Length: 586
Image (tube, rainbow, N blue to C red):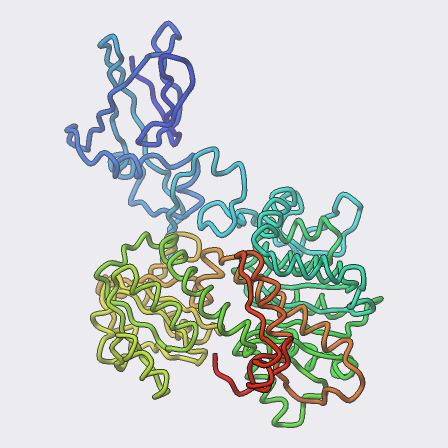
C-alpha cells in the first residue's frame, strides 16, 4: 500500500488505539487497506539514491507544514529541481510483516528575494497556546495586518488600546498568574499598601518591557490607586498575549511584538496624548517617554511631579538634562539603587544570557571562546554563567578597576582586535555605542554569534551591515544570518537589541525586586512634601532599598539577626536601619 503525504506530520496509531508522534515528524495516520490500525512500525528513511540514511535531516527537510515554503520565501531553482531535491521515500513495516510506504515532498518554492526564511516544524500542541519568550510560536507575528489598522474591543466594549490580538487575553492572564507566584515582594507590597492607596491621584506614563512581570507591576500600581497608560521600551520584547490580557482588563496598552521604529514612537505618543487624561508621573526604561514628552509636550513636562528611570541609558540622559539645566522635575535613578544594580543587572543576566543563547542557537558552551564587552554587573553575571558551563571567556574593558576585578576572577582582559578572529560568541554589555564595529564584524570567523546584553541597541554597528554586498537571511524569530560575498556568515541575534528580553524570558523573582523598587520610587516622589526633591537626579533612599530586600526575604524563609541596644550604640546605628552609609559599596 502506498500513501502520498505532502507537508504534513505523521502520527502512527499503535495497537491500543492512541496516536503518537513519529520520530520524523510527518503527519497523518497510516492504516491498512481494511481501515484497521496497522500496529507497531519500524521506520526507514531513504535518501535521494534510495538508500537508507540521513533520516533526521530528511525528515526536517521534508516535514514542513503546508505553505511554509512559500510563506517563508524558501528559494528554488525550478519546480522540477525542487521536487527532485525534496522528495523522500519512507517505508514502514507492520507487525504482520506487510510493508507500507509513503512519500513526502519538500516545501513549495517561495518567492525569491534577499531575505531567505526557514522555520522549524511545529507540533499541534505547540500551536495551541502561546508560550512566552519562545522563538517559535510565542507572541505570534503571523498577522500581516498592523494593529494600528485594526479596531478591537475587549469584552467590556473598551477600545482605548492597540495590541496585536485581543483574543490572546486568556493565555496572557495565565502568564501573569504564573509570574505573580514568583514575585512575592511585589505582591506583598500590593497587599500591605492596597488599603492606603498611596498613589491615588497619580497618572503614570509607563514605557518598559511589556511582559508578564511588568503586568504584575502595572496591576500593582493600579491597586495602589494609580491610573496608567503604557507602551513598550523595546520593539521585540513585548509578549503579545500579556499585552492582550492587560487590554482585556481595561488598561490603555499600546504595544506589540515586532513594532517598526515608527510604530514604537507612535505608541509612546498615544500614551502621552489623550484628550481627557493629563500625566503627572513617568516610569521609564531607556528615557524614550521622557524624551518624547520633553520634545512634543514641553508645557506638560513641567507639570510632571517626578520621573523614575531604571536603565543606564535613561539615567545618563537624565544627568545630561540636569547638567544643561533642562530637567525641570525631580527624577529617581533606580538603575543605581542597590536593589536594582546588584540583583537585576547581576543575577537576572547570569540566568537569562544562557537561556537566550540556547533558545536561539542551540549552542553548547563547553570549550567555546566567548568575548564579553564590559565587566560591570551585567558583564559579571554573563561571565559567571558562561564560565560555569566551561566556556573560555575574554573581557574587554576601559575601566582599570573593573579590569582588575575581571583578572582576579580568572578572566583574561584583552582588546577586541586581539581576539575577534577566534571568538565563537561576542556579547556586548558596555552601555556604550559601536563597541563592535563593521571592521570587527568583517574579521569575525564563520559562524560567530553576536548579541547585545547592554540596554542600548547601539553597541553593535548593525546599520553598517545593511549594505548591498551583504545578504540577510532569517533563520528563526530574532535570529539572522549575515552572509558575506565569500560565503562567510555570522549569526546576529535580535538585530543588536537586548537579547535576553527579545529572545528568552527573565527570572520573575529578580524582576520582582526591581519592580518593587520602581513602585516605591513612584510612591516616594508622588508623596514627597514640597521642597524635599529639587530639579535633579536622586538615588532611592537607603531605607527604601533595605525595605525592598526585606519584602523578599520571607520567600527564602530567611531570618534576620537583630542588634542589641549595646551593639547598635557601639557602631552608631538605629536598630531598624539603615544599616550602611550611602557611600558603602555592596
